[in-house]
Each structure stands twice: as structure tokens, then as C-alpha cells.
Length: 342
Image (cartoon, rainbow, N blue to C red; front, side, top):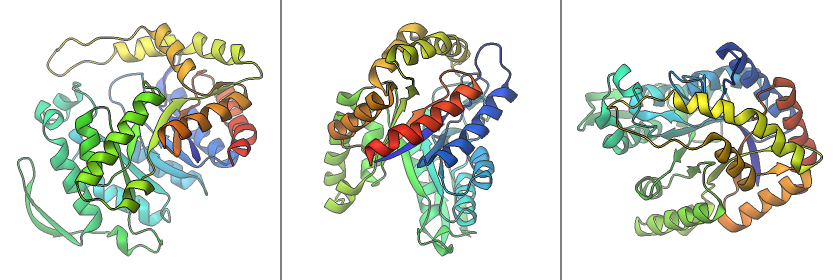
């Protein structure tokens, strides 16, 4: 089992984006020191829900600031970026970090981002498979050309080639954020592990893993590929000597952040969208994830792994909105929870 930190660079009420980003950078450094496996970085545009607009850029900074921990994107949004540009950046980070970089990609949402970056709603609704396949070719082949619906260009050499790096890893790992049966099938057919969101519990995650395995078998994936796929479960972690104290910390801070952050999302086509109640959503997250004592957290993570078959975790540890509390939370996760899982 591998446990990592999920960093949104969340801007809580009364804070500026600089404070949120400073906490994100510092929390990654502490995660490295505390013995966590991976720091996963979220990407958002134009909203205080998350103040990092380029997860791959922040990953580059953190790979330079750390020495041991892996750094991954959760996720880089393909519909608002050219897959070749993402592939070049991923290869660069893979080569220069000695193989410590993981590329998580996803569809994102139907947000105004699609208008701002000029890619359009079709990139979100129909274009993700084409973008993903072009990205994968870039990471695996020596030269690439394209003749698809969205991307058409003559064959060009891949520079740098991640498979020619000095690491023993042939290229950066690619993980796909999955929120629907269609995205599960897409990932399974390509043999890519899934990143599953914090808003669903063990039962639904277990169903998605089972669906992934069925699609992977139907696509001709080997038994070794299927059993060896290391999916990632996103969640929330807040530690305290009493569970009531951990829950109280999150209930004081997270609803305000969720309300201002989620309210700020604007759809590209003005479609209506349902909003979760921030307080009820926080309570749901506290019930689903390792929020409480270190013993409870270890038991909850072990139970999720057993129920779902998922071996990796990306845990939001900045739910207090406070830098000192986030650092303490990470250190306790490393010192008091991880030893119980090994």
C-alpha cells in the first residue's frame, strides 16, 4: 500500500492565492520529509477551489524541491491543452527527475476554460479519447504524426524520448481520472490505472475496479496487467487524538472553502449545474475517509484497500486551511499511520 498527499492549493475564505500556493509547496516538502509516497497536484482555472492552473508546472518546481517523493498530476486537463505539449513536458520531467514523475490526465469539466483556451465544448464532450491516444503515442514512440478529427500534422521526432532516459523506468506512468463507465472503459482498454474521486465510497470504487477489469479482459489485456494495475483512491485525511476533534477541524474550515470555490465554476454553455451542500458534503467526506485518530485512519485505509483492491491513496491533508496544521497533519500521517500499514 502506498499513501500520498493530494494537493489542491485550496484558497480558503480570507486567504489570497499566494498563501494557498505557499501552503501547497511547503506541504509537498513536508510530505517528502514524512515518508509519503507521492504528492498529487490538482489543476484548476479561474476559481479559488484550487489556485494551481498548471499541475505539470508546479510538479516541475516540486521535483526540484524534493529528493525522494514521487510527484504526480491529478490531473492535467487534456481538453484545454495540446497532448503533444503535455507529452513533451511529461517526458522532460521524467528524464530530469530520474523517473519520479507520474502523469495523471482527465477530461475536466464543461467549464468556461474551454472558451478561454479556444478548444471548445467538443474537446470535452468528444475529443478526450483522441487526445489521450495521441499523448500515449508521444510517450511510447520515436516519431509521431497525426491525422485525426482534432489533430493533424506531419510526422515529427519525439525529443526527448522518455524511453531513452537514464532511469530504469521506460516512460512516465500515465493515470486516468475516471468518473463514469465510459471513462473506466477508456482507461481499461488502454491498460491505464484509474484515479477515483473522493466523493464516492468503497462500494462504488470496488464496482469501478471490477468494471475496469472486465473491460481490460475484453480488450485482450494480460492477467498480469490486470492484477498489477495500481489504481489510486482520492480521499481526505485529518488526524487528531480524538475523532470528534478531527471532524470539528474540517467542519469549521471546509464548508466555506467549498462554497466559494465551487460557486465560482462557470459552464461554457451556461448549462445549469447542481451544487452540493458544502456542510453536508464535508460530513460525507468525514464519514468516507480517514478522519480521526491515527489508529482509525490506518484501519480505514486498510479496509478500503481490502474492499476495493486499490493499493494507492491520494489524501487531502490541507482541509484545515492552516499551514501549521497541515504540516502537523502530514507529519502525523507519516509517523503514526504509515508504520501501521507496513
